[in-house]
Length: 373
Image (cartoon, rainbow, N blue to C red; front, side):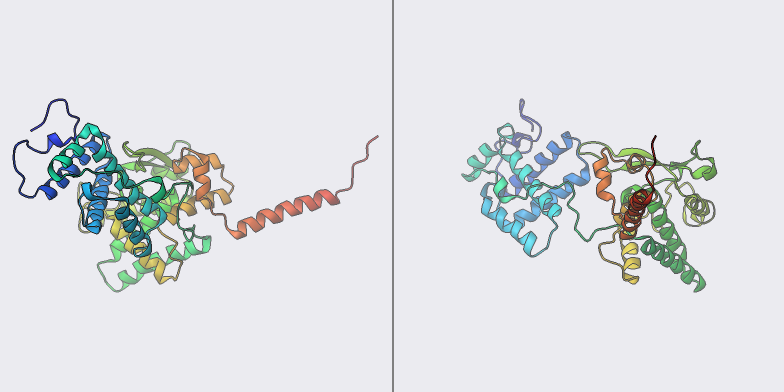
């Protein structure tokens, strides 16, 4: 039963006074996690974020073989070392584990939630903060992607799309049922590149998200794409944006998919642009596995992931001379500096740019001086 005057997530909300606990350590720990979950829900954080953090807390508890009121900075150091040395976690992943542990400890040591008093009364010890600036990674760089992550070159991208199309042709000629899902995936990859989309943005598209652009009538019904599940800020709903079509071939393959092939896969009444043969919508795992299979079959770098299609979109638009602010709006970036991080101009582009600059300089130097009266 709740206790008047206590904040949501306090110990009194979860532990009934005067009742002996059968497994006090486990039950108090679970009550702490429940309270922390309520606190995060009150901050409007996504359920997926809360569940990931809870999973990381449980993993730390198992590694330390101790309960929160027994945790020490040494436990944290050993766990972080194991994550780096044994599991090979990326910098950003390690920091996310550290953040989850730091936030939980901050919650349980806060006097507003009364956990310190409960632990002292029941176990003769109280929780402390175990993550400090001296044993946690600092976020000092704006982008922390692995150095091997990059954009596709034009030739690599064409090879990837051609290979995806070849899998459709091969499966269909052999009479396999998988040709239609393969066609869907090939089209999905092309559309993700065509609009510079993230994985979940691509997955969550519905047919109704396609529309006309009054300033681009040549694209017909596919001149505009409404992204409704963009990357959200902490505690906020998904960010929306509209992306205009820039290449004519995009409208052609969308029209072919929507009018001819999608109806063969979608159940009547289904709105998903990329329906699954087993459910309403294709899953992220299927997208990842298909992409990796095609990339590895071509012998491309492991650093070329699905997000590489978005990097390629930005890079190729910049190389084509598009206005950087236009590219920024297309990607949904608030700051131009973020867009610049995605830009991986090719060596050919740099060579052409340098050659043009040198030619202009040389022509200006050789031009005979003008005579003045």
